[in-house]
Length: 266
Image (cartoon, rainbow, N blue to C red):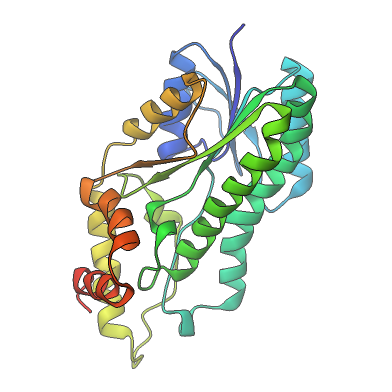
């Protein structure tokens, strides 16, 4: 019997590529989007808004009604946010956490009872290499993804008794259209951050444009699904991006901070 997979944020980017790839491999795939449109997909696209619990319950209810089970949950949906902490609206910070952190939690809380009833399941949380460190002008994004990383570790322990495996996969720069949906704090005229922030925005977009093919994420997720004993943490991206996580563990804090600042021209 084909495994039933739910992947959030499947209308574009990593989610769409991964959903299509897994469908080609023979899985029964359900993707979600806040505004699903008819498209030529090999998977079903359902409406789901991470900030609307009733829409989460409705989408998952439809899958259970049709398939009777959910074998794999891939928490992929999210949003980007940039800006100096001092100048970023607090309501936008909260919206980023509601999407990237609390939204993922609400999906898991809705799926876990079904997996527990099945006495098996796999949850894959898509985080970010940025979640392993504070990055200039991306602090809220880093903090939300870092929080999901830590929560993954907690859930792995809490759900092991129910034969539910929990893992995460942290991408570095992947070539997607994430910038189009990102909240950008404006570069305010006369701001003390204006020059360096504008340079960093350009650098972020350049990194994404030159990022890795999202098919690499799809292949890694496929590997995780087929691994009877998946690791707790996975990373996908450029060597130096992945190595930066190792450097953070072994270098003195201020030296590591200096390396990051030099990288971003600060």
